[in-house]
Length: 467
Image (cartoon, rainbow, N blue to C red; front, side, top):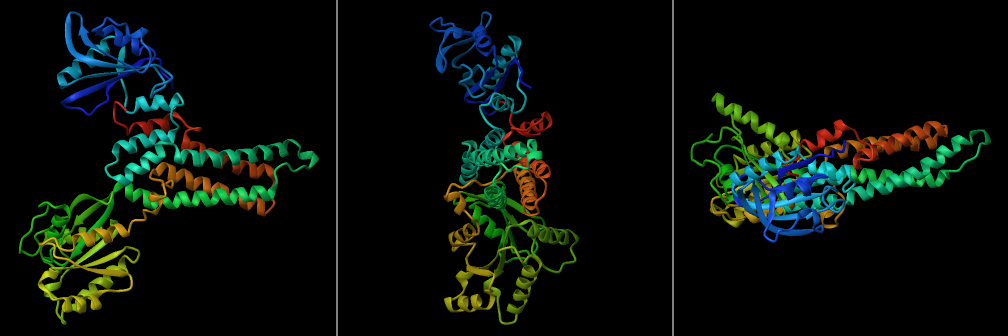
């Protein structure tokens, strides 16, 4: 798949800015750049050392396009492993396009999405999981997702998989050797040591697979559904959390007829808050559709906030609220439920204590707030953070966020368990060897030791052009 042609693309975000960086990579990258570059000191770029900067102008014949700074990186000591040139020009979109078109006329072609990183992978600068982490790093929008992507790009996940694969490969070699001496009935692979290795691999694989539940929500944001009867302050709470007037607030019941979503980073973790339509019996067709969507959003949420108007709670209405709590808990027993007593500023501490004793259950917690006055909002945020298992993040453990990796790990675990069963039942070495090969194959698909054009095409198609 390696191409000898030189590719070019805008490496910075599209649009006008202070500066823009145009990246060229390929065997002829430096000579192509040299053909359109006029150094202020008459330097020949092809004669310059790697990792050097040069000031001059990009010229198209007698026409000067811009004053630029050119960076030279000679292969293999570059991001792609090839000769690479980066042209830092002024950020005018006109200048960007003029320089790129000039380079295209001088021997470059436009880079495909992710082609620079693809070349880095093909040239052995990154393994496949590290290359995928580049895209995750670019897409990271909070501290936690950034930390996970950095850990993977530095090779934390790759090193863990590579170590397991190497140990398994050593035993696979001994098993294969036994097959060569089948007639002598010799045993080169110590079965007890092999079983210990399989137990260790199984433990690591299960830990990595379990981490996907945390990693996936951190990467994509933790969905939190705000539910409750009409006019209890759901939209006011959303606005208080976001610190902006995101949702329409009025005294008219049923104002919110569709779900409203927005994101907020709390303590480095991304949360997606969903303001839903109020749950009540209604004859309004449009409002009833919104209520149906509310239950769909509860299904999708990781955490449910049940908002109640504490100022309207009476001895007669409390049983109805308890029924609503039980309904949500019975329908969604595994979802954390926070009961939010809104408008608590209108009540005395004694009344609030009574409400808490009445509504708080074994698997739920009650927090008193005033969404309008933004009282108790920080307590709510801290409680939401407590639902996130960030211990692995603090300990810098490997966390899986990639669905492809998760699938390969599940398949590898299945094969390892087959090998264990084969050892326990004294299965013949040739059949055990087949299961070991399949496990090694699954490990290889993660790091790119086993790959194909279709897989690479699917992965790098999701990258931005210029990376």
